[in-house]
Image (tube, rainbow, N blue to C red; front, side):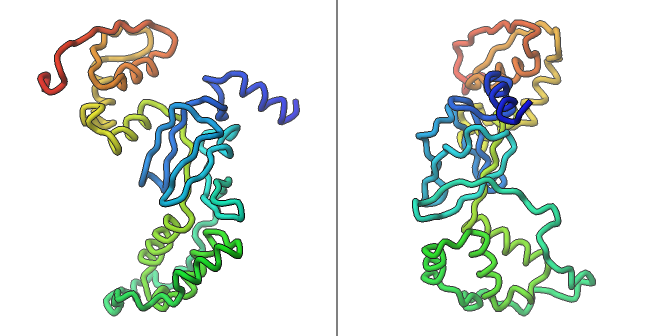
Length: 249
């Protein structure tokens, strides 16, 4: 079976697909959890705003969940491209494993960086990628080599998030949806953390073949988590509660 045939058959099984498809639900993890965006419908005409730039979501369609994308700039504007992390690590030389380096002599007076914003804009016009800009910033920093390994990595990650932000394509499970809502709109789910949701499922003995009656006043996140755990094995009895959430608290 060819790869194209396998992809076509996988896309036909929409809700069980390992690949994204047009109209599916996805969760976008930007810069390793700094921002979570839940998309009800993944459509090619939709855009994602990262910083002050907008990127088309077209490259995300047809990709496996768990794919990592990086924001790049080109002649046609900003776009998302597939990114594969280097398995060998960040390439930093462990020169100060004995702890001989420290940051006591470093003064943050904004004079250590010789690369100006105009230079960075010129690099972008010439088609430089985000990683190349980060490496140029490191090379033009007068204090980078004097920092500890931890400070060097912290500096690198900070610049990478600014000049080469990354987007992780996640499948929306109950856990990830709860994390996304708690980070952005916690009031919609009653300020419930994911550990509290897990505890509710555990104390309610929600397992396969269980008969469950749920009264959900948290926007459906609890009902969805129960349905996810039961699968297609058992129906869920849903009760209505007319009391507001504040009264129940």
